[in-house]
Length: 394
Ligand code: GCU
Image (tube, rainbow, N blue to C red):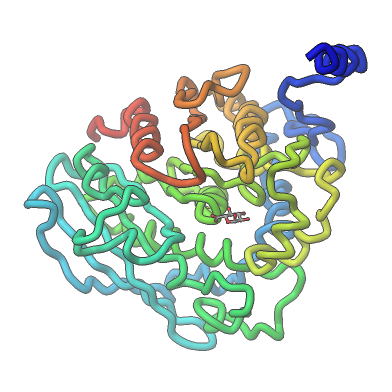
């Protein structure tokens, strides 16, 4: 015991700290890469936000071929509409068709809309788990997409399976899924788009459909994703301003986890680009083992969501995602909201496990338990939307 105390004292004297690590040498948010200060909303929108978007496009998520943005190539087919959830909801099964330069592609999605108070707010959910988690018949139910609870709180919800868009598999290559109808994989370059961007593209197509659906209020739609789906949800909202809210659940490395902080138990860029290279533009692997010296970081990406609503969440047993790095992303992104006269994250430190920080336009909650998305998380996202009046019509 005496020995242990002595070791403890020596460590303290040596300046060793048991406190949480702090971010180090974080790249500036309100300063351009050329060193110019950004002091107004106008400068942010015309100079800084575009250069950050360009940075994350080329270096992390890749650039989508322009032909994907041509709305004349997109069509929707209503496959079925019926009553659901004991008459409290309407279910619509829809198929999105895309005519690419190299062929036809389509994917289905499921929508549940509460029967009353139209037009209702909605959540588009990117499902990165097997189909049974988003069963349109509701014979199987999963907290991963608690459609009944979402509807009972007055929100519509739409979901698609990410694997219907592009396979989540390192061996699959880029001649499958949506990629196969857009360009040949032999034409790919370092900054070409990759799977996270392809999945995000699909979430935006559901927004196209929502804009034509009178029962849903397209101005109050959030996009929700977990883990690799959380990384996708963030990129969806950054690239598609029609989403008024984004919920980024346990997204970790390549999502919200800040890189300029030493969290040794969390995933590194070297690891993620080795195991999941097909999620990102090939450029991203340049930053392997350079976390502390790279000239950009995730708070700058999250800031591109401003002035819309941003919700970030961590789980207490999810060190791999780097919870503290996820919280710092929320904190350091906040000045972008301040340019719009709003508050970002209103907090000076991480909340206790089980608590949520939801005073500003950025929400952060810290759930007890493992890497997962469950009813607790969904309820925090809906609380946040409620706080911002989403359930008040119009
Ligand atoms: C792996 C991966 C993470 C990812 C997670 C998930 O753990 O390393 O980056 O977020 O899978 O998608 O569940």
